[in-house]
Figure 1 (tube, rainbow, N blue to C red):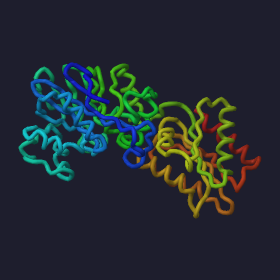
Figure 2 (cartoon, helix red, strand yellow; figure 1 turned 180 degrees about the vertical axis):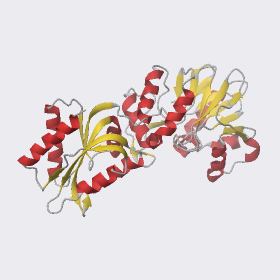
Figure 3 (cartoon, rainbow, N blue to C red; figure 1 turned 90 degrees about the vertical axis):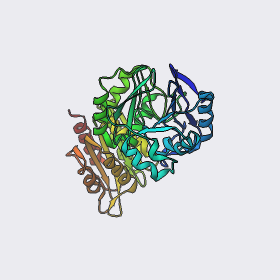
Figure 4 (cartoon, rainbow, N blue to C red; figure 1 turned 90 degrees about the horizontal axis):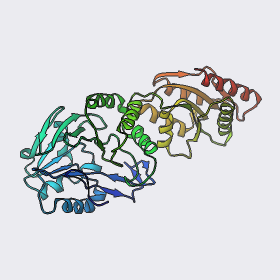
Length: 389
């Protein structure tokens, strides 16, 4: 995407990456990802963040076209991660007198990545509540540590009412694609930012009094309508509260028998009036979507085969990922399967008990190899317990 004006004298100069296979080396992005960068042209010309090395050539073209022969006076770094900060050194060498506006933590980290000429003389340390006047436009800064790196800071442009929100409010996919924002934004949030819900709560409080007309994240589309909707979603997500009532059944099955029990429970739940029932095979599904669903719904069922006196690895991996992302405040049902020494249930329970405010259903089900009639009755009891308020 070439540069275009998004507000008075403010230009989008980011690039699209349509060929990337894995974002951050682990997340599947079938519709690609954007690296968003912005330019303010005023008495002082200001670049807000650079882009990933995969987009350097196009980004330089976009920047030069937007500058139209002028120089860059300042670079604002809202987030230093390489998919946004890769071209900092290039920009410094291209504009020898350019100053850098960033947090002290960012300046502490920059030398780990770059060898910047006259580094000390370029530094302008900014903190929470700081102001910088660029002419007709003024930036106010909102510290946002651990959303999701420690050096992150938001930049709010007062004249246009634009919040440059670093990775917050971003999503996978390209800005111009018409895919639903919510699904890819939710997957992005919980997998990348989700662990730091308290920090997100804090920065939302600090920004709550601002008049925000646009949100410009570092990935995905610029948000310029229904701003309250996006903030409301983030408020729900960062509180670790369920977004929707429903049951997410995650299963890890070796030969299919555990899968059968998970599917049977799904049928029983629907027969009893549960509208939202989502099943996923952890061995064959994108784990980032499984994590998204676990956070989205109010109840979680774990169904897994026993394996090596523990639990089948896809389930263990899933639960450890949830624990690492601070998963909490859910009702949980457990189904284990084992032919001679069922061990999956206790292994799953051990990890769940390390999470905060988890209510485990009393109807823990043990299947010996293949589901029988008694197991079906037990699944009925588990369904009723899950659906009980």
